[in-house]
Length: 159
Image (cartoon, helix red, strand yellow):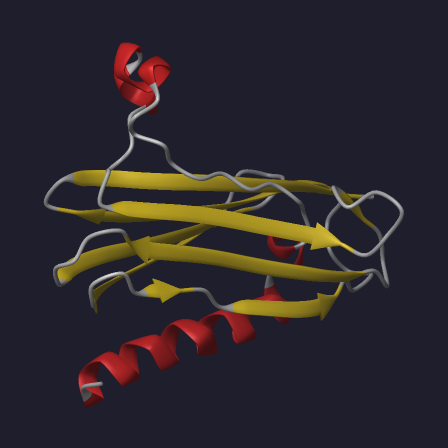
């Protein structure tokens, strides 16, 4: 693995670790979404179409009684994954966006080389602090290359 790739992957993992305490609510939900470009419904609805070369998922889960709802003190896990479904090297632009209840968004974008069939899947677990605003938070993960974009979004409610 090249030094440059190692640095970029380390940056992603570090960012998720740092964003956990700062933006915990975006990591406190359960929702997973993966792409299936062969699905005929996607062919009929172009805005739902996904890139056949990349599969993306987002998962955010609270350990409370309802995995889609987090309260102060709940442990929450956040994970996303991006998979190169081809047998060739791809240059993939990864974009993560954290959106808060009042609509503020924190975007992060970087380009990463992916080996054939490689998967990137960082995960972090944090505790929801009491100072977070209540409401719905959202994490969107997008991956794109020359063939287009695949995306997945997870949401949670902080009570």
